[in-house]
Image 1: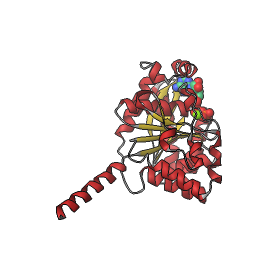
Image 2: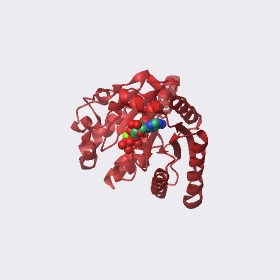
Image 3: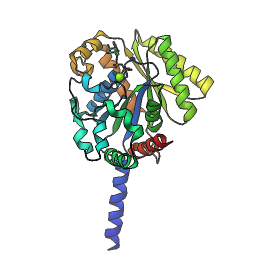
Image 4: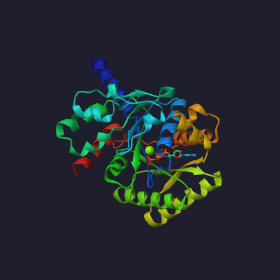
Length: 288
Ligand SMILES: Nc1ncnc2c1ncn2[C@@H]1O[C@H](COP(=O)(O)OP(=O)(O)OP(=O)(O)O)[C@@H](O)[C@H]1O
Ligand SMILES: [Mg+2]
């Protein structure tokens, strides 16, 4: 009898550990149009190809377009959960290589006006994703607004996308400052997109790393850079992710390296990580 109860406890605790594996990343930027959605989607596919289970959530409140980049029209989005009936599995859609995604919707700004019953329902549905995915990548809108900031501050980690242009660098720095002023512990990493050469990517990342360390006392590591590549533009026009239609293009090789780098970053599991903690932080930020 004792043995049976003991075994049961062991099974339960092993389930809990497994549930904790989900890593929630907010992909964001200061300036708009720097390549967040393309980076999110193609990085997600690269992670899938490395054997990970990945969900992309399109949380761009203004201009949701992950489904457009996939050439799909979404019937359902996160917004459908607000009806307190739709199940999370009904809004989860299939992308290439086993990728799952949740489309954004124009009603996403209503998140702020939901009543407690609706919030409880949305949270209960999103909780189902805990342990289901290894990675949840949230494509936020461009960074300097309140809702995007809530997504970033709720995530386990933030990935800031910038280009080497001075305006993009300045806005990335402003975003890093805003985020680190609210939470110094949140890991912030960079992707430098649209670089002419790897050197340019490294120099841009180094510039941001140095100012962030000196003036904000935060460590901003880089996950790598992505070459400015006409294949990306062609793929966007074809509405197929560039890693899918041009797997050997320079940008595809770069994103694979970014994925490999991310997989190598140690993930320290803890009480404050994963979907449940993400939701707890989100709810308290919505209500504050
Ligand atoms: N590495 C690249 N090489 C060439 N062009 C690129 C690259 N990355 C992005 N682009 C171009 O930039 C455009 C915008 O990219 P994307 O939609 O991913 O940006 P975004 O940051 O998500 O924009 P928004 O702030 O509006 O959400 C793409 O349609 C493509 O034309
Ligand atoms: Mg976008």
